[in-house]
Length: 226
Image (cartoon, rainbow, N blue to C red):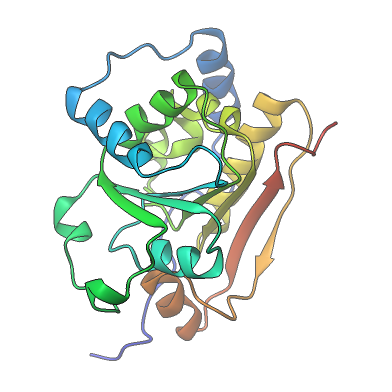
């Protein structure tokens, strides 16, 4: 099987879902109050335990096998980088470097982002950078509620501040992310095509090498709209 043979998500949905805006406004009017799972509280404790409370914080949300977390930690040596994924199996996969050569300014934790994002907000944490790289697109029309822009937790994401970046190989996903942010923030957020010269994740590398167009939304939440 060829390496660079990845396909763009197939969907009958060709544009922003007609019910997305309504859902986002509903979630704003009725904040998500699901109780925190104990393992997610422990994971948040572990993620912040090695932080000196001075280094800028970076969150790699849904980091998968963690290659992106490692690269971010190497690129930002003065930051504390947190890689979060719900799959222990993915987090335990072999890394591109031996453990002894991994950056010391990072931590991996297994957690559900639905709780983890809210726990960071509850603790008053502010991020310097926030990456949501190639999340599961759930491309079927009926899957809207599984995508982050339509999820009840979405309004908590921009509360964490910093430079928020979302990348996908499905333009609809990034467009929906932008619209959801427009509604929550009250100002327009742009998304564009993106050339991944230095791929951060294995998926990004495979999509790029398959000749796909990649898409990115990037907004500085601490400056934009001011």
